[in-house]
Length: 331
Length: 179
Image 1 (cartoon, chains in turn purple, cyan):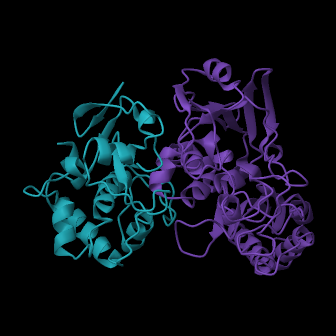
Image 2 (cartoon, rainbow over the protein chains, first blue to last red):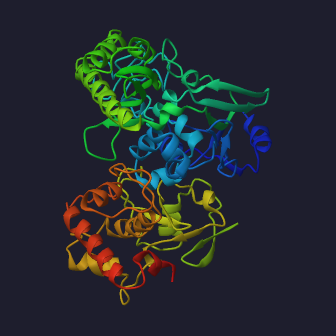
Image 3 (cartoon, chains in turn yellow, blue):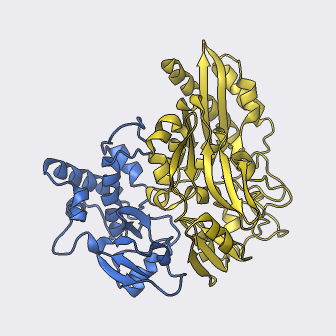
């Protein structure tokens, strides 16, 4: 690890003042950043510990929730309001990492974790445009089972590894930011970038900007929602693909739907085309598969991950089928 | 600044690069906590922070200033086993033993999580008040602790047995550590 200074921020203003330093990075639970520092992929000169900042979950008007960025993943998953109003979010979080890691990791840090592409981690032996811009991408012709099928570029086929963020993408979550130039809010689906020519730039955060909270707007259909993760082992593995969905069915027709995919792209992938295709349609497997096909018509798979297109298609249909049953039971 | 390890106030390292794991082992000579992968993949370094299980390899010691850390040395001793330790012996919950301190620290907190009504990936009803530690629940909840010898079946049997014994008695396994 490269030497660094460590300080603990007492509040957001304090963190932002300390964070303007060019080599500074904010530190949450450390479950990804400390590992990357040990591998010398990340070399901050100063760490600003922000785990002492807002760790509350408060109700907002109409049944929404505002989640402090320092809330631990496990605390968010366990919150009874989340479990009843946004079950897909609890399902997504408990499908990720291990209990130990969920106890450490913060919500803000989860959003900003970096890809687990093995070529990104291997600075001694592999080319990676994300780690070293212009170097090339060894994943494209290497082991890319876990890599992107949507929204990738010739420069980068890495995926965003978060489960939590996929559920939040489906929920129209809003990310609250504070920085040296003031406060602003961005849609979670706009926080992360597609790789394009600059896979090293992963989010639209400016240097020194801090995630202070994530807001979940009220969404009654989220009461009928779930998250399904498909992976190479039953637990403690990253997603090959995952599906976050909320569905409302009335008289056999889809009246509202939210759908997002994980493990398929450089960012949590909100399946807007599939959502549009589903609205007003009969809640049938034929509709679900047709909508999935619409979303996946843009897929550009690689030789070792071509199976993920069909896997995503079937999993979307299976999840929507299950939610149709539970929606009818609720009605 | 200091950190409280097994009830004793001890200094923190001057260099912030020192992980909690290395501080426990190399400075405090509490070598029960093991370094397995050193990258958060195996769970051998599991300790309790404020009663919650964490990975000490991914923790910088300075992050835990003022907090209470419990290692395997604070859970049981060679002459006074914690009930989980006794159950691991009785059910062949280990072979080489390297992952065992992490398994036991993890299990102590895991039992408390289930009793507190925290759901897992395999829980059907997210809104249940508490969760029975079935075979599937235990395998899921303990999945952050790998055993390369492959003693997982013994580990699950040991935890189930310790839970059953404690359910019959008045004091639960989780309370044993706090006492």
